[in-house]
Length: 403
Image (cartoon, rainbow, N blue to C red; front, side, top):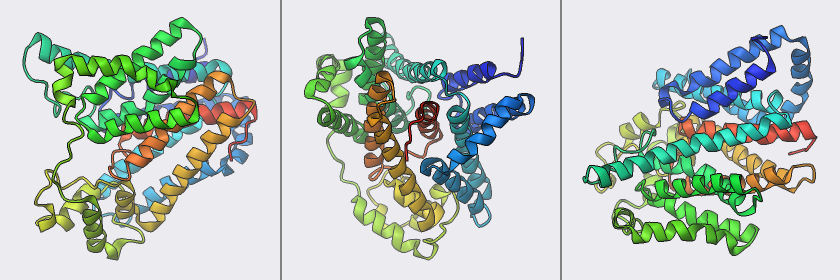
């Protein structure tokens, strides 16, 4: 048995996809680096793989790959002037390792017998996160008979909003595959993913994420038909009729009296205007925000002072206008590539349906992070890298031009 082969690399990537939500966020980058180190050994040992890699370099000019690479380079450069070089370096490692995983899937693990198991492994890992959260809810309220704590019981994530955003990503492709998949066995699997994710999102205490659920359903209805709304009915009734859930989600749409977001953004920009071109260093937002806003009267109604409520604002404070422009271009080209993929006659029907759902998930994430800022969490970055790697990999194998 060969210990350095594409098959072993494929199994390693499958394992990483299955476990990446489970490891602490601080250890997440090591997963990508393990895969990267093995890939380098594979290229050294297999001359054919090395020649494939050399031929693949010409595809690197494609917008999403090139822009992502430039973003990683800018994050590395920001360490030089960062106020907290250790934090900036850790943030750089997250994005570099995710980019490595993206490249491995795109250029090497991209055969038809690879990409379907990769996508299903992603759904399995997301399902585990959701089911564990559902178990926490039922165990606490039904078995122990004590109130469920949305601050500490957040499955394997750091907090409830990150949990909700993480599960928004598989939610819509699972819904699309549940509606259109003709295989009863796999349809049931996607129904379980869909139901568990919805319950977990509704119980995460993230009002913005719940708005994202209905925004995504609206977008799917526009793209296809209103039968996408049918999938929400069983879970909706479950949430409405069972007291464990209804007593918690009944106030999700009640807005608090906190400081208005526009006023907060204006105050942050005014206080940080001298650093607008290059920012203060990647992954340093929390310390920066606390430093420039501590004691401001504008924060009198905020519970947290390290939350920007705006991902582009966070990006601008960390990497300046250059980083903001790169981030916006990456988001635009990501959506453009997904649209091109779903319109291609060469793409399989299964993946077309799945990536219509992914398109909706990405639009929802981008829109919600105009008023929130969890999209830059390591687990969410890895989710996006994995899904984009799978899509770009199949597109490369089948000759589908995405840009």
